Image 1 (tube, one colour):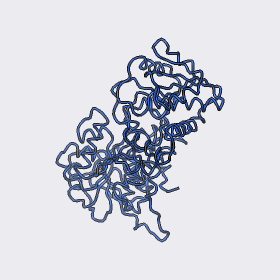
Image 2 (cartoon, helix red, strand yellow):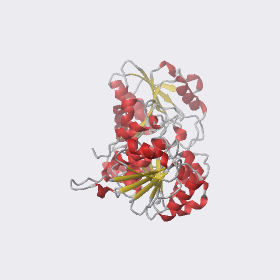
Image 3 (cartoon, one colour):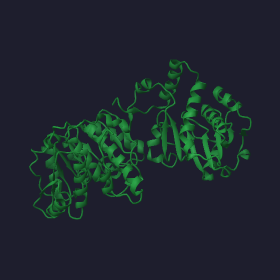
Length: 495
């Protein structure tokens, strides 16, 4: 998708650096200066001049960034102390230029020379850069362990030292950064759940790389961010509810009607023209009283869904929130998969039913959207030992069944049948609460009803769901946030 930014691997990042230097006719030293200035601009609002700041650089270009940052901060009258972790005898050319402009750098060549970093208020990590490909050993390993033991605020330059950019770590010797300021793009490894302790938060800064060249790189990994709003369509003033689809949500069971109501309300908030919610009899009064904007029809059974309603008049169907996995409900899911001629949005117990009945997978309508959390996905395809293994299974499932999979997690990942992965950047830890997923199902289903493609509906739904969660967290805080707050904060608009 052209509007979304691509994530580059290590070799592509190097090529982007080289290309920019040639095209812009600037030196690698000048590019390093641009990166260092961008880093300082990003972290300066978080610094105080009364703080003692340790800036720890290595022998390579990441160390060069660190020493350039040290010079900039010193010129701005910050209280800094530079350190050189000399893991190589010879510094890279750009590193040595910046290093020699400082005259009080403390050189660390052995374990005995490692200082007590707990004496500092802030640590800026510039030891290793994005090209690291093997575990850290020797006295440098002890340096990183001492940084982590100091329990101070740590800002990492481009990438935490010790973290690989394209693969999972094979060592725990990695700087635990509070904020990583990454140059031009986040690294793929920032999105791996296993790395959450090393990349607590991250932001990117533009260092002047040629964006056209970056976007021309062959990458199947994309960043889902604010740029996705460009695919939103406007509503003509003369439009009416019939222009925005009639949605059917099949949801709820005894004790789980909250899932049906949350999903229904979110569906309406996302803009569907009409909504009918199909629930067991026990849910009729709940839906009618809590969501007057929705129509409601009921199953003949009191506690769970046992029959499929007439589906031909609906433009889009979502199924799953609070559904239960009763034997009769399983037959409803099978009948829906068999009879639906349009893509479905499938969540929660509907996914669990498919996971328990292998033959149902082949019945999935083309371009359907599945929205499992990690445990539901593992039930669907089998357990994974790592997140990268799970991403691979996600891609294989999307390709085999020609569907979109929304794998819900701290960084929700959307896979397309074409083999792309989209990593969402909105959302927060306050959304780890019951009903949040039901809200997402409603949003995506409502968007699909408005004639967005399944992939676009999923991308828009995931991003705006997270953005609403961020808005809600600003008002409620992380701990007090509940799923209803996400619906209340939902605003699917370009501005």
